[in-house]
Image (cartoon, one colour):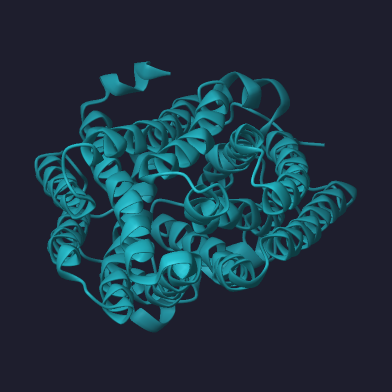
Length: 434
């Protein structure tokens, strides 16, 4: 898996990702503690609102900005977004009201909505071979998971000697280092000449590719499942740790770390899993595991609310949810790479970025606002949403197979996307020629 780091451009990009992720991990812990300081037991509601605003920025801003900057040099786009995120991180320690959190989160996440799809869409160009790309996805996911494990641990250690607001400084350092690494990476200025030339032509490009590609419609349904499981973890972990179980600040870091452990255990094994059973079967396995994890969370929550016990069961449930979401998320970009070309890839990745976070726009407020009134009711609502997404994903895949579309052929390189008039979808990563 680490062999892909021999590519110097990918090595620089991956290093930038890792350092920025560590800073972002500190930000996650610091925001949770800041919300608890401002709102007490209603911290879940504050976080739910903040994360909803984040999703509004991702869904509303990402497609617009991508269409605007698509013709600009990628290095300028990435470094500029990092500079904005750095500035916002330095302002967060001075927040004293919840509304200030909301404003700063919107600006910071608008910059992230610019950076992330542009960054992700570079990797298939830097590593065009399908197996290399799969290993890069696994390595990238492992980085996310190590961040989820190590950043909370680092945060817990730092919290023993400094106040939580100092964690925002670590976030700023991470964004600064990311900008420097990207600045010196050998990144192509433009990734193709075939993209639509005007803003209004570029804006709907990603959505059009999704509409004509069965594999991407399947991906849309699995986004719903991921959003349900992830919302429970990110919104309500602080409530479980500090309010339900009455534990200290470090318990939040441990809770989030458990989720990271589950995801990491899967991520390091994704290359051989995908090689053996294909992309969509891997993702469907993750869907089932997330459903099992949410069902377990219902039981754990009922027990915890009634008797304030079950801390270790909660951690085990978070491990399970982490494993399931990793099985879905890690190989999913293979479907995106197969459905796009270098010319439109940033727009397709941005469409997935917006569509996936539109699901969080529903699940985050449900987790926060319903959870503020009744934690068991919030978990049940998320479970029902996940079941609906899982059933849709199964139906889309079954219909595509019956329609003689191509699925489950691991190891192929990304191909040109089919034209709207094509009779069949073109084979590629995660698809099988029938």
